[in-house]
Amino acid sequence: MVYQSLYRRFRPQTFSEVIGQDHLVAALRNAVIEERVGHAYLLSGPRGTGKTSTARILAKALNCVEPSGDGEPCGSCDSCANFESGTSMDLVELDAASNNNVANIREITANAALGSPGNRKVYLLDEVHMLTAAASNALLKTLEEPPDHVIFVLATTDPQKVLPTIRSRTQHVELALVAPELLSLHVEQIAKRAELEIDSTVIDYVVERGSGSVRDTLSALDQVVTAGGIPEHRGSADALVNAIVAQDLAESMAAVAETVAAGVDPKDLAYRTTRKLRDIFLAGAGVNSGEATAEELPELAEKAGEMTRAVNVRALELLGQALVDMRQAPDPRLVLDLALVRLFARASDSQQPQRSTKSASQTQSPSGGPAAQARAALASTQITDEPEATGVDSVESVVPPPPPSQEAAAADSVESVVPPP
Ligand SMILES: [Zn+2]
Image (cartoon, rainbow, N blue to C red; front, side, top):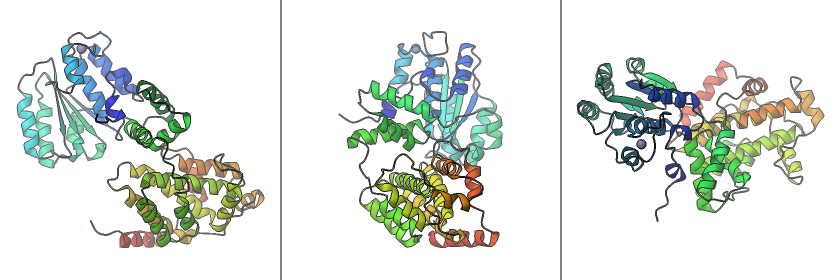
């Protein structure tokens, strides 16, 4: 039997199954109930948050033969069955990333005028910002005078790149990253439906790895299931952490290369390294993150003494951002390498090595005690969960921005390391 990913197996089939997008779902359900669905919607948001799933449910609800009256599709009529098996003629999906030219759009718009078996025909154009200018203009013409029974749903991860004239012809709805609590609940329910036995450690792990994306969260769960547990790469981040503590760029990149070659996923490496650097930061302030054992604490505190607090915080900040960027990147390892380059391009900011005792850290940072620093450090590691982390300000205040000349020098050295595309 071919293994079907959990995300595909448990794709939401009704509006109420879409999680974390209440405003969008409520608006569409009401539009279906009141029969005033618009001719064009633009759904924007990070990948894996429900843009295409929602568009499919809308098409399904509009063509349901026996609608229940609450805006939801019935799920059992012939039309609904066709939608669930992916064979409905009332939904046309186009991936604009690979079909981005004017001929692709003309083909769609020419057919749009023709009738279809159901009530309404829905065209779902995914990654619509990838259309060429000519294709965008061809689409715009159709959006200006859409056939009566046709609805366009345009989905994009990058709404700023969509022609403003197209945006103004659509109802634009933004989808948000899904909150960790909602994702935890979702993972728990999916596990139950799939008859998987998982504990809270697995749930926490996959939710962190998913960073607010339902798809990425369930992919992480797929990986855990396939591997028979959370990948046991304990210690896999040690080489990289040691190289960062030693502030050695070449050694850091070598550590990444070796660890990845040994089969560790770059995202997993970045995640573990960030956690370890956080533990080091907290140990330097005399705080246990709760994840370090009593035996590990002295070693962590020693590492904190070897690296400056500024480098430690900067590393947390850059790796936290790298974790977010890696989700969209075709080559996640490159993102990690670049984060390291940026880290050491600015390492000249470094000040006195931090001490491992409480009092020393307090005298060094009059602006905040260990608790405030701990919050700042935690905020750095939580950037993956909350794009607008509340602690960012306090992190900024720990690391003074470099003067413009250093900024320029840093940018230069980044460019010199990156090969031209
Ligand atoms: Zn139905």
